Image (cartoon, rainbow, N blue to C red; front, top):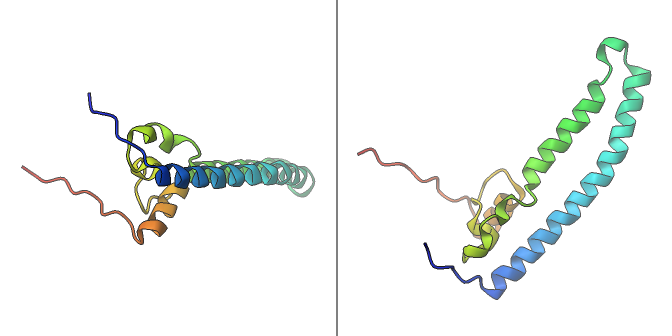
Length: 119
């Protein structure tokens, strides 16, 4: 069993700010999805013929899913408390997620992809 790593106060504060930004973005997404979904269903019902009905609504749902995958609200938290770099230690700089992009900005570039040596 590995010893637990210490999370410093600055890392904890940085992660708090990141989490609150993510919560704010998730709330904005929820508000927008509420109205977009209503508009999409109305457009499906009144603008499209039967064979295309649902096209706009399900496109809105796919858009919401892509946003959720990018935002990745809780996934990096699984082992962050045991990582001295907190949320950044549980993601990769340059990943196509919110934390990955923020880490890339803070670190001024993506993390190099580890190469597997052939033995």
